[in-house]
Image (cartoon, rainbow, N blue to C red; front, top):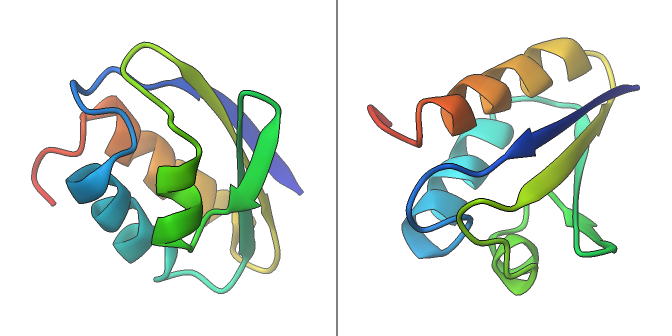
Length: 88
């Protein structure tokens, strides 16, 4: 199991376009992914689940991956968030 807590610095947080990009990147990996914000956990490969979190700019989320490529999944999402979803 790999886990990462990270701050959302992009202006929109995890809404609409960023959530769609997040799911596209996460879906490239076979590991299970869970996102937690405000005490709520959702499937990290579900756009509806992610948008229901209401994770805004400046808030922290926790990513938990479990599976064969969990380290690569967490690293890819870390890079995505740190680069504010640019270039995807």
